[in-house]
Amino acid sequence: DTAVSQTPKYLVTQMGNDKSIKCEQNLGHDTMYWYKQDSKKFLKIMFSYNNKELIINETVPNRFSPKSPDKAHLNLHINSLELGDSAVYFCASSQVSGRSYEQYFGPGTRLTVT
Amino acid sequence: AQRVTQPEKLLSVFKGAPVELKCNYSYSGSPELFWYVQYSRQRLQLLLRHISRESIKGFTADLNKGETSFHLKKPFAQEEDSAMYYCALNNAGNMLTFGGGTRLMVKP
Figure (cartoon, rainbow over the protein chains, first blue to last red):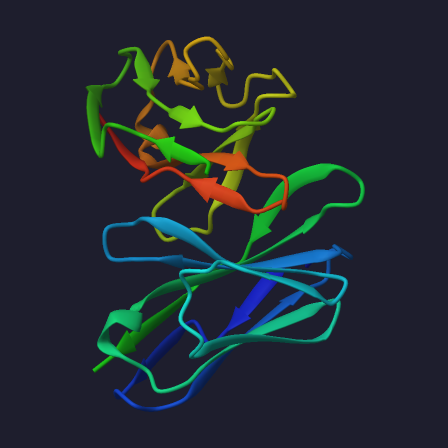
């Protein structure tokens, strides 16, 4: 199936730990994103990554770092997890060069920090 | 800076009633606006975009630059329309700014 996939689907961990969430897209898109959806369902962009150019939302703490081994993957690494990091994290991709701005979303990763 | 506002967190209507989900935006450039929908336990997906001027699942949305609005409308709501709806603005950096979302509940 052509899609955006994320692993794991659920992640429960303790404060202070370091964790990673993986994202892969097989749509051939040139741009990938990470979004955070908080408990009130508010969605906020965290990062955009296009051809090795990273655009960071300035409100994102530097404990969050995206890593892109290739165009089809954009992983999210989080250091020193805090309670406030609990949220659903969505990966997305789009083909920006063709001016098709539709973003395709992954199923989300529900992170719970205890 | 761009901003998207959805004033209603929850909208509850009966089946067959008209629906209007409000969206207002502020953006200094020429806006690219979208409506995304998230059904229960499903991923976020594009519902429609203003440049297409199309109707999807009976929904339409017209960009009103004078009122800086992009309200989503459907003349007759169905139970399967129950979902979270997000209005979104695409900025020059190709990142989406989302509104706070409106939960639509269609009662039988």
